[in-house]
Image (cartoon, rainbow, N blue to C red; front, side):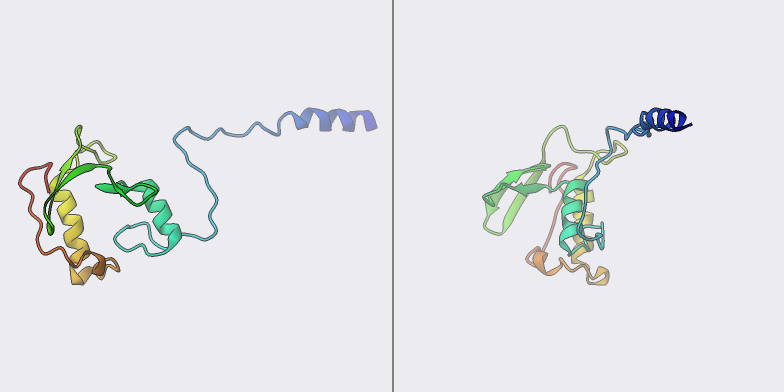
Length: 139
């Protein structure tokens, strides 16, 4: 009887790792706290900001030394208060494959700047007085 119990335990130990495998597209990581908002227009806590950086790309990002680097777009400084951003080709896409347009970017910034949306990031963008989209890839 004891031998059968040991044999049973021995055999069942081989099934311990027989769980469903995780798809290669899955990312798992631990967090100290839950994110409060995954909409980057409203996220203010560190956890939400960290996850949003994994979920969303920026037009321009920053290197470790805080110098700007192209992410989705290159930029030109036309005057100290006038910038032109142009998408890097091939143009970035949404998850469904639709190309992101300058109008999409403008709509996001207009939303943040709209007092009705109450975005906490509105003040950071207060210097934006106007945005134009001369083409689908230029802001």
